Length: 154
Image (cartoon, rainbow, N blue to C red; front, side, top):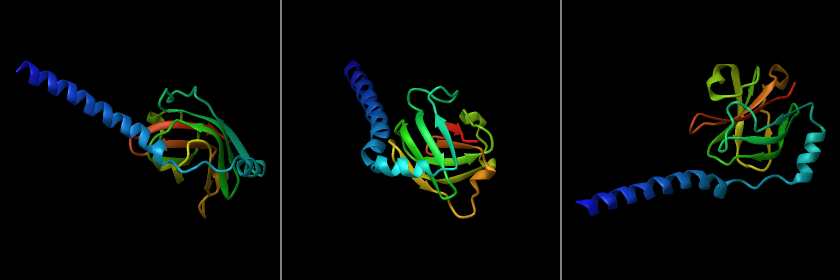
């Protein structure tokens, strides 16, 4: 009985560890390539607003963080920097800075699209969305309802 219990415990730990590593590494392996840095800089130069992602927000930790500059124009949002890798990231516009998952109210935010790269990205602003109606951006992990990062842009 002792060998069976030990086998179940060790294999159970290996299964849980393997699953956890898979959840962490799969988004890295399947991430879209980051846009060319020259294109990111060009688009950021024509932006109307900008903000900064930092790692020192209340909801940030060693697995959930972002850093760099976020630039917004009426047609596109550009990020130059790094994000902690993870699954199912979405970018939202919010009224007021959201710095933790317990302060995120989806009814007061607009989702703009999927974030598929962790070393910079470009997202189109959907028709009918006026970035001037909001003042902050939020990157959110839909799969785990987890705060990643946010920044105020005006």
